[in-house]
Length: 133
Image (cartoon, rainbow, N blue to C red; front, side, top):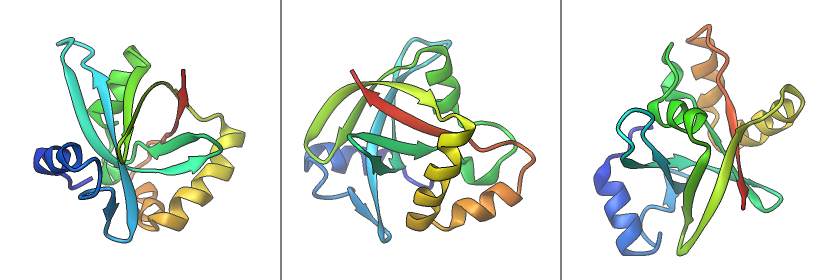
């Protein structure tokens, strides 16, 4: 996504009052642990709810490589999530093919460009479920 650290800063400072609603959709903050550095990295991502769990897409705009945050959560799936003022721990997992079929429709309904991103790459773009722990 084309978010920067300023987006993260304003989101945190305002408990999402600034940053949650973004270009007609909604964003959360996902904090992962760097797979090589061990440092914490926070990324704003578009999300939708699936029951009580947020769902995000590892699109990287259709790039042929997975986004760093996705590679990080593959190495260490325990993450922190902030949705508006609510902060919680979650375990990230890639949706199964059956889950993805349903969730992809939900995610493209909120951000239609995901379909375009998938046509730009041979990589299967993952859908990630952030399950509360």
